[in-house]
Amino acid sequence: MESQLDYHTAKALLEWQVEFGVTETISDVPVNRFEVAPEPKAKPVLVAAAQARAAPVRPMHPAPVEVDGTVLARAASAGAHDIAALKVAMAGFEACELKRGARNLVFADGTPGARVMVIGEAPGREEDRDGLPFVGAAGQLLDKMLGAIDLSRTENAYLTNVLPWRPPQNREATPEEIAMLLPFLERHVTLAKPDFLVLMGNVACQAVLGKRGITRLRGEWDEAMGLPVLPMFHPAYLLRNPEKKREAWADLLSLKVRLRD
Image (cartoon, rainbow, N blue to C red; front, side, top):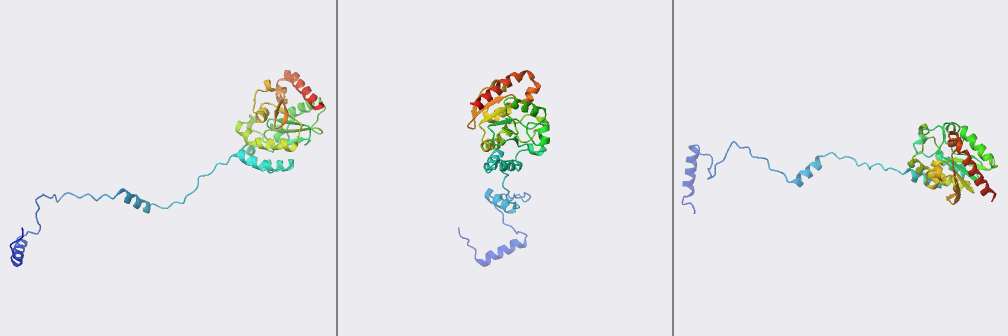
């Protein structure tokens, strides 16, 4: 409904109301003047964007990549084209923690290219001190065993170990250590070119044959790395169990027959 008041009349009425203190219009709904109006909520997307803009920019660092020691050992050993180069590669290998606690790299002893390659377990205290495998009392016994069938490390036998570094307190090698260093042993056998492998003890059997239980395996010819393999008691074991020397002698005679044939 249109207002019937003209401009001047309406203006006069408003001035009269202002003069009497009427400064606000009144609606049909009451208004609580003491209520604090809440701040309007930002949309979630806008809030997230604002927080992203306010957050400091941090540089992205890639997570460290764990390198497989076995892969490194395989690459290092594959690059060795002769036994001297293999020794250098093993001396420079840093992925095995055993190296940090050992005094010397125990690489090999004897005659490279010999028909018989003897593989032991791991260096002991004397081997770690001298940097040679099979020294001390166990080494002396091994020399006597080899001599009984006309073998000698100085003429026609080649000696090495599965592990080139001494484990702490002469503990047994772990499966992880054996697996890591196996590429070096495999390359060593390839470069040495023996006709027969003699495995002294459980660790050597586990590394080469993937089997344990030397009392069951000893004296039974097997094949691995493309070669005939003879498991035998370790000389250190024979020193602790001299009654087993009879069985060791039988194994040596079996090796002698193979060499003669």
